[in-house]
Every structure is written in C-alpha cells, then in structure tokens.
Image (cartoon, rainbow, N blue to C red; front, side, top):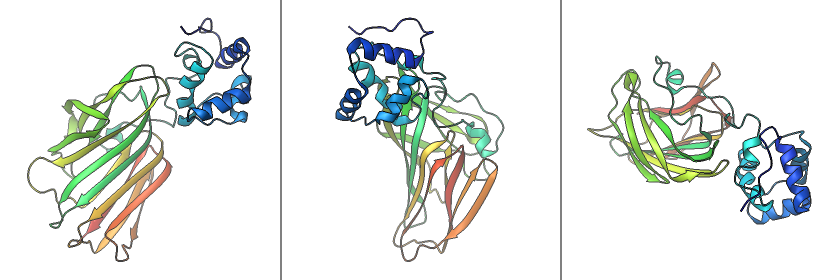
Length: 288
C-alpha cells in the first residue's frame, strides 16, 4: 500500500522532500532509477523540484511523476495532485476550434480541460484523379487529471461551405463515440482511449477521415491546433500521375497570417512542420 503525504496544503516540493527523507533516497538515486524506467530527468531538474524553485511542467517531466511516486513508495497522485495549476494545459493556451476557423461559437470543447496535446500529425493522400483518398491524424496526448478517458476531435467543412459529410474511423489507440454535428458544418467526435489514463500518462491516437459520398476534390488541407503543440506537421502525398503545378504552405497563429510557395523539385509530396506552434492552424494548398 502506498504512503500518503499529508494534507493538500503541502506543496509539491515539501511532499517530495518528505518522501525522500522518509525513504532515504538521494537525488542521484532517483535520477538513475527514473532513467532505468525510461524517464530521464536531470539532477538539476530534480533539485529544482525539491527546493520549490520550479515544478514539473514539460510533458516528459509530467510523465515521470507516476514513476517518481512509485519509487518513493507513495500512493498514486500523492505528488501530482500538489502541482500548482495542475488542471491547466501544460503547453499553452487553448483556442476554441470555431474561433480558429472564424466561425460563430459552438458548444464547449469536450475533454480539453483534461488533456495536453503534445503533437499532432496530419497525413493526406491524393489519388490519380486529384481526389483526397484519405487523411490521417495522429496525436500524442498527456493526461492533465487522473482517469481521463478521451478527447474530442473536430473536423471542419470545405472552405466556403457549411456542408460536412466527413466520416471518421479509429485506426489505433482509441474508439470513436458520441459524434455530434455542431454549427456551421463543424463535426466533433469523441475519441475514447483504450483505457483511462493516470495523471501525466501519455497516449497516442490515430484516426482516418474520408468523405462519405463522391470524390473529395478539395485542394486545401489544414491542421487546427487548439493548444500550443510541441510539434505540428502536415504532409500531403500526391499520386505519381497527378502532381500539382503549384503548392503553397501557410499558417495562422496569434493574429499573424502568412503563406509562401514551395517547389516540389520533382518530388511527389510536400510537408510543413512547426515546433512550439499554436493555437492556430497550418496547412498546404495546391493547384493543378
């Protein structure tokens, strides 16, 4: 049975220091054991945590907290629930999906208080007729509370329309439930994880989106980031018999909009990657 660390007025640093003293654990010992378990944390970081000068904030640090609790013989959550602002998203602010698209407000974002989105990759395959064959979104997420079991993914309509017949299917790491049609063609789907997550635990989900009826001849695809992401990536891959004559990449972030042409240089794909990105959106558009 794990050992508690007193009332919730105890700070993270105090709880960590008390647990280390009780177990006779040194910073070096904790560093080595965390590294053995796949969670490398520097001595400097551990020292800051114990002194109270800093708290774990980055995703990799949050993922190490459950292991740190186990090493110190603490009950699950004994340290993590003492993090100041632990219910806040760890990689920046969140902007509602409708605001990113410039549409009127839709219902509250389900699950956004519960997870931190670390990275999001969008891969789009374009067929021989110029049609979108498939679009896959892979996300890495970290739980911001104990027991979080899912997150909402939104898909917007084609540019200039409010029609949305996009069907989403789970590929890995989740199932799809509670599909809801919101305002202005925005569709939200609840992605349910394979199991509930512990605070600070990460998971990966992958879904595929495709049009339910007819060919999707859209020539513009973008990834919307409601939160600040450590990495955002859009990769569009073209059929060898249908390569565009011109391509652009673009982004919008914090009121700044920018687009520029890219040369495929004989290749058949174009990608755009940004680190420390969002809230905002980035994408690729093309002409035949």
